[in-house]
Length: 110
Length: 110
DNA sequence: TTGTAAGATAGCAATATTACAATGTACTCT
DNA sequence: AGAGTACATTGTAATATTGCTATCTTACAA
Image (tube, rainbow over the protein chains, first blue to last red):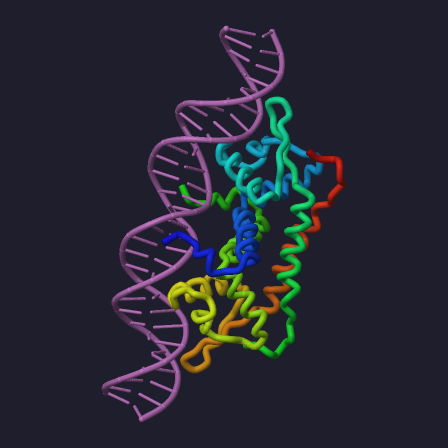
């Protein structure tokens, strides 16, 4: 059906999945990588950097913006994007919490 | 087009995205949550736990298995699934590395 | 062997995603 | 105003995902 039954799951699980989905495309990972490298905010010369069309990049940027990972400020005709530090930290903690919940009590399992 | 241009990106970016995609569905997050809680390996009574059809669960399990996050051992007619400890650790590090690459040099940005 | 139980797989319908060309919008410069 | 630049949005085509029913497959029990 292509539609996710979100109501079956907890808010946390849905949130985790939502963030993961934003990170689930290499172009978006590449955008984030680039934004981290160019610590100062860069604009859509991502189009040059990655080999995708301008419209495609714009769409990926929007998805990242929608989950709050990045934010953009208009500077004349250009737009400066950058990582949202608070959100970034929150997401980092969300993932760390999940990952650290599992302990390898080796031998218990399969 | 629905097809990802993986060749444009680095192997790391593709790998990160691939793992993120496996985590990008609440049902799969719920499965992992459940496997962590029931430290001992449980089988497909996930069908009871989550409210999805058996076939759907089976499909999600396969996706998690494909990226190596979980593994299953056959026990008679049942299958015991559990987290793959090594892979889990590797993924944890992959994410930690990415998340810690960004420092909030506050004020630099937007 | 026949039946049964637990999972896997195939095939389908509905919906989502990816990517792009074309177009729209907003700002800047002359 | 008119032209150009930088993005965003819209529309569209191709493909992927989600979830299900129905149907294997495998292991075990009688």
